[in-house]
View 1 (cartoon, one colour):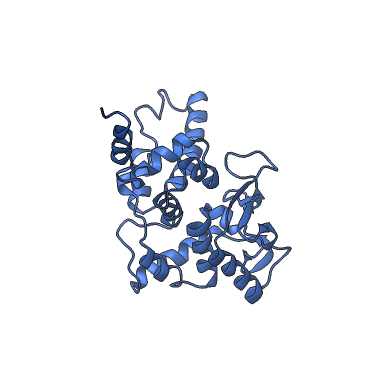
View 2 (cartoon, rainbow, N blue to C red):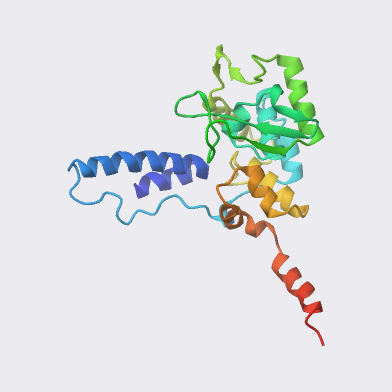
Length: 252
């Protein structure tokens, strides 16, 4: 199991995908343990995938501008949705023109489930629950541009290339990301993965002094503790600044 996790890390697999793979394998091994296949706990001493803020590679504004146009129109759309609205890749794959609530608000209601390959509920949400996120004008323009150029199916922009009745296949995006990296025509830092687009959204929010409570809600985290643990390092100097401000009220 340790070697399995290490291989995922070496191959640049994102934390969310690592956690999903770990959870599924963990369930299988624990079932086998309960059935007597293993004499001892096969997971004893195994450390589950952990997010390391120091390993997160977030694209700069210049890098993002070049990377988002390095692939095809679909890649550009998903890159914009992840970096501009903080969507998970599965949520971006289920993008719909009908989810634009008003000019500056997008309502995320579903995501493409990588296991079932069907649209399903959001992570940490019950069926029917949703979350509203900011919709920057440039991202709205990208959605409308893509819809006008490629059309939609019941409002959905992305469908299976070979069968519009099916959801968008996740591997299509992964394959394209690998092709862009291999081409070497754009600057992609060592260790950068596509999830870095979502990290860019968080970094952009926090650097513009948007409260972390709002960022946690928009990103769909289970609790603000998760957001703080992952993105506290993106708020450089915040504690030092707070100390100086508080000191004003404490001086004689």
